[in-house]
Amino acid sequence: MTGELRSIDSIVRERAALPAVQELEQNSNCQAIDIRQAKQQLGEFANHFGYTNLNRVPPLLFAWKANSDLSQQLQQTTIPAARQPGRFSVPMVTMVDYINENVAGHPGVIHGGMTATLATSLMGLAAALNFSGQDVVVSTMKMDYRKPVFTASFVKVHAWLYGASKGTASAAVRLYDLQNQLLYEAVSDLKISGEGVGN
Image (cartoon, rainbow, N blue to C red; front, side):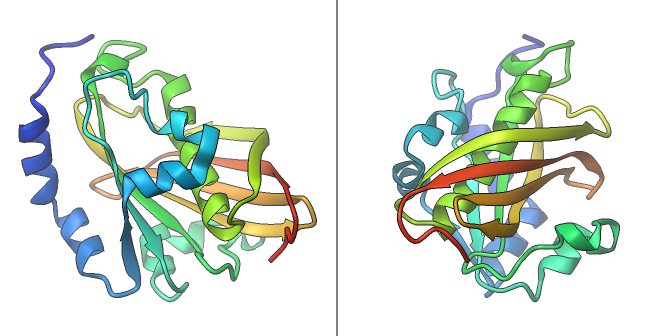
């Protein structure tokens, strides 16, 4: 742990004033998701949202209704064509999260396993929203750590599906700081079980 933990109230106040949050809240293509509803949809994935045993602010979650604004959000020109967001009912989900001071690996830098946890949870949510009622399991994940993710900071995380066939889906995630620097990205193969799996 590095330094004193901030109070939840102070984090909530600062987050509400962030331009990134206000932009998401005012975007008509973007809809807030209640974290409790998200956890119900995620089933066992709900544990990933959280390190819930820690004293922390639940993340803000948003679902996108259309692909039209995603290019600007994702700096899409840097994403290979094969990984562009697909035409799903929820083309992308976005999370604004505060990285707690007590999840450091090295002092002041988030533990890599926690970064993977954030990525997994958001990809799981993207799949859960598109394959309602199905079970989602991450079967593989390739991670690319670009820059350190510092504790005591806010991040914006996007996750989307870029392909699906019977019983499987392909997902990607990107984590940015609030200056829109790409800090981390990952791609994953998901196993989807249940009836009616597919686009």
